[in-house]
Amino acid sequence: MKYLNPRADLTFKRIFGEHPDLVISLLNALLPLKAGEEITEIEYLPSELVPDNPLRKFSIVDVRCRDMQGRHFLVEMQMLWSPEFRQRVLFNASKAYVRQLDTGEGYGLLQPVYSLNLVNEVFEPELQGYYHHYAMVHVEHTDRIIEGLQLIFVELPKFTPHTYAEKRMHILWLRFLTEINETTRTIPEELLEAPEIKKALTVLEESAFTDAELAGYEHFWDGISVEKTLYNSAIRRGLVEGKAEGLAEGKVEGKAEGLIEGKAEGLAEGEKKKALTIAKQAKEMGMSIDNILLLTGLKKEELPF
Image (cartoon, rainbow, N blue to C red; front, top):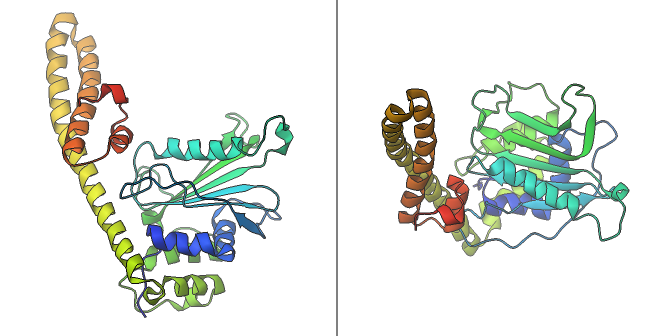
């Protein structure tokens, strides 16, 4: 039996966007829900329009749903990490929270929004754990929480079954997402013993997809590879060129205005020049304006083209 990778856009949405029982199982396994708060039934919410770029990941949530209590759940598989991703997750979760109310309705009707983000890259190298839970917590009294937004990030590359003493389905779903791909020929028995995972594996069988869908699947991975190359190349070249120019200017200004002040200004100028250099390189490589703005943090009016 040949399988596809569950982390691809096509497969992830097929598994969790078309099978309520599977997304319920995933959410119950990975969200920080207390006893008695488990999800038992959900309804899917309409997906937003997908922009025309290879990754389709800069503003789109893969799966949106709510349960019978009115709690909203956003699920996203993010293949490439960028510094702005946390802000985008917060923006999408906040938008889902605000949209619950119609004009004139009371705030008491608002229900929590949970955003589950599965990230295919390491973005917290200094932290040992792979599971990151953000909530609005009192700084001095961490038991005091403002209910509303719950943001969860999972660094998939850090996960191993032996690094975290968690509940069984938590481990099995993460094993499914990290171990199954096109090279898989034998499925571990522990995964087959879980009915939900077994069903998800059936959905992943290559024979279940049309030729057109398989072509789109290959195009997705090509897009990921191209975007990653563009990003890394732009970063490397920008760091070298921008830092060198900025430090040089900082030294010149420092001689006139004082070494400490000049060095600070030079470093700031270097950061700006680095961003501008990255923007130029990304433009030459064919990256869209919107993606360049996300990549560099520049404003549109600051772009050098």
